[in-house]
Image (tube, rainbow over all chains, first blue to last red; front, side, top):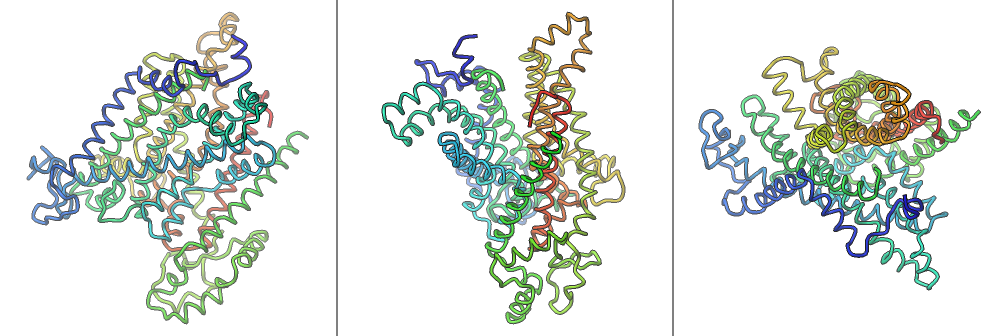
Length: 303
Length: 326
C-alpha cells in the first residue's frame, strides 16, 4: 500500500487520461455493458424513427380494427399491427414507442436536475463546512424523511400535471443522496495539496470549487446517476398509471397500462405489451448503470 | 446510560424532523391550487355556501394560524377529522352539500389505526419473501466475485429492478389469479389475499438486498479474520454463517432504514392495484379527494415511522457490531 493510498480514498487521476474516460473504458470491457448499450440504442432508434416513418398516428382511432391481437396470437392479427390494437383501434407499437420517448425525456431531464441540485448542495456544504454545512445537511436529512411519493402525488394530484411540473417534482425528490455523496468527496479533495496550493496562490473560492474540485468529483457521481434514470422512468410511469402523469391523449407507459387494465380479461396485450418495452429499456439502462458503478468502485477501491 | 443519551438525542432530532415535515406538507397543501371545500360540497354548491363552510372550518385564516391550531391539536394527540369520510366508514366525496355535519366525520387517527396493521402485515410478509429470494443469490454472488454466481446476481438484480411494480402486479394477477387460479388478487378476504401483493413488493425490494449482500459478503471474505478462521479449523459453512453473514447484516439493516421511503412508494402503488385496504390505498384516496387532514396525518405518521425505524436500525446495528458508535 503506497502512501497515497493511505492518505486518501480518492486517487489523483493519472495524467494521461481523464477519470471519466477510465471509468467508461473499464465499464465498456464488461459484456453486460455492451448488451445493455446495444438494446438501449436499438430501442432509442426505434422510438425516434418508427412513429415517424411508419406513418401511423398513435392517437388515431379506428373502431373497425379495435382490439386486434399481437402477431400470431389469436384471431385477426396482421403484420401492419405487430403489437395489436387497443379498445379504440389505436396501434399499440407506435403508442408504446411514443410512450418511450416521453419516458426517456422525463427520466433523463429529471436525473440531470437531481444531480445538479444535489451536486451544488454537496459542493457548498463540503467546501465551506461550518454553519453552511450544518444548515444544508439538516435540510438534506429533513428532505430524506419526507415521504416523497406522498408529496409528489399530492402536488401533481391537486395541480395539473404538465411535463415541466413532473420533472420538477421528481427532480426535487432525489437530490439528498447526491448531496451526501458529493459532500464527502468534496471534503476529502478539499484537504489535498493542490487545493491548498490554489488557496495560497489566492484563487477565489468560486474558482477553486468550479475549476478544481467539481471536474474531479462530479464524473464518478454522474456515471452512477445512470441507474437513477431508470428509477425515475419507473416513477414517471407510476405517476402516469395513477393518472398523475402526462395526460391523455398523449400516450405514456403509465396511462396505456392503466387503460389496458380495464380490458385485461379480453385483451391482455394492451396492459402487458407496453410494459415489455418499458422493462427492456429499464433493464438495458440498469445493465449499463451497474457496469459503470462497478467500474467506478473498482477504480476507487471499495464500494 | 449511553443508550439513554443516544435515545434522547435521536428522539429530539426525530421530533424536529417530523415537525419540519408537517410544516412543509401543511404549507404545500394550502399553497397549491385545488379547493377541498369545492370537492366536499360538490360541484353544484353555490359559491356563498362554499365560502361559509370554508370560513367555519377556518380554511380562510392565515396559514400560520391554521398551522398553529393544527400543531396544538397534535400535541394533544388529535390529528383532526377527515374532510370527506364519514365515521361510518364508506368514503363518499362531494355528492351533496347539505348533509355530513362535521361531528360525524371520521377521526384521522382512527382511519390510520384501522389500515396500518394491514400494511404492516403486507410489509413484513414481503420482507420475508424478499429475504428468501435475495439472501441465497446475494451470498453466493459475494462468495465468488467476478465468477458466474456474481454475474447471475448482477443480471437477476438488474432485471428485478427493471420490473415496474404496477405492471408486474397486473401480469402476475393475470397469470396466477386469472389463468391458473392459484391465489386471490383483488380486495381482502383473509391472509391469502396478502400473498400476491407481497410477492410483487418482494421482487421490488430484492435487488437492493442482493446488491448490498454481494458487495458486503465479498468485502468480508477478503478480511484477514476469514483466513484465520480457516486456520482455526472452522468449516466453510461455519465461516460463512458466523462471520460473513453476521458482518453483512449491518449494511442490510442500514439499507432497511435508507430504503424505507422506497418501500412506502411500493406499498402505495401495490395496494392501489390489488385494492388492498391498507395505508397506501388510504393515501391515494386521500390525495384524490383532497382530504387535507388525512394527507397530513399520514405524512406525519410515516415520517415518525421513518425516524423510529432508523433509530431501531442503529440500535440493532450496534448490538450486532459493538465497534459501531452513534
